[in-house]
Image 1 (cartoon, one colour):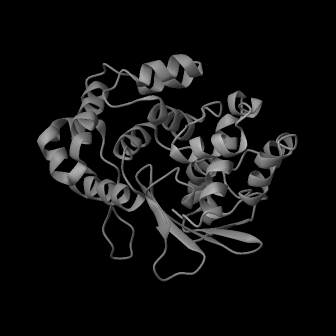
Image 2 (tube, one colour):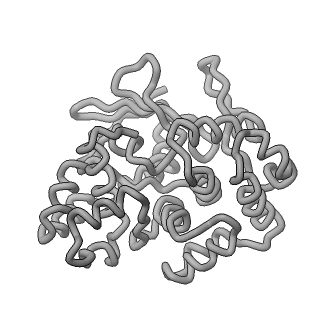
Amino acid sequence: MMYTIERPKNFDIAQIFDCGQCFRFNKHESKENTYCGVAFGKYLEITQSENSVDFNCDKETFDTLWYSFLNLDNDYSLYIDSFKDDKTLYTASQFSSGIRILKQDPWETLCSFIISQNNNIPRIKGIIENMSKAYGEKIECGDGIERYAFPTANSLYEAGTDAIFALKTGFRAKYIYDAASKVAVGEFDLNAIFDMPLDEAMQALMTIKGVGPKVASCVLLFGFSKYDAFPIDVWVKKILNNYYSDGMSPHFTGKHAGIAQQYLFYYERCKNNVYL
């Protein structure tokens, strides 16, 4: 089954899935111009051509799940145009113009970015896949390959710290368990984060062990669509030192700060031949 749409403006699957915002999508091993992965407990193959995009699903699934996940209701040309007064940012946004901020599952995003601390992309992806295989529900994909949904907070809570540590999560095991236990028993309401202003949401997330400003900002941007979040890691620090030594751009504290961050992050890494 295949559903096809006209390729949207400012849409490139390589930039979307390789910009560091998610960890469960990869290039398909045998199909050209195709990425595949799991989100919200469903498997997706997405193939891009010059004028169209193919999805391995029916129209109803596309409309109810993947349209929102891929953030197709936003006109990203408006964001790029708004950055014209900042030469560095505008250059980066044009280079990275195919990026869209995915609307990911908040729980999976929280765990994934806890795992990302002091870690590299291949190891992050490997840990998440092993965790999903061990504690997530099996997904029927019809191609003979076993795939698994991301485990629920309850399943990781029941597994316990030692079992999570056995997945080679290292010092992060106790942080993952703390997050899982607080969500599973109702001590922490992830859905409440959607209605909080940025500062309040940041403070709430940082009550979870191991969640600092950088992880919280990533979770808010990629899991809660809070575009005013501006994650700062070593790459962004380098950008700020190299291009903004006279002061932060107002765009970095504005309502589209997170989109600006993704353009700059992807541009700087590619310019330095450091691909994700």
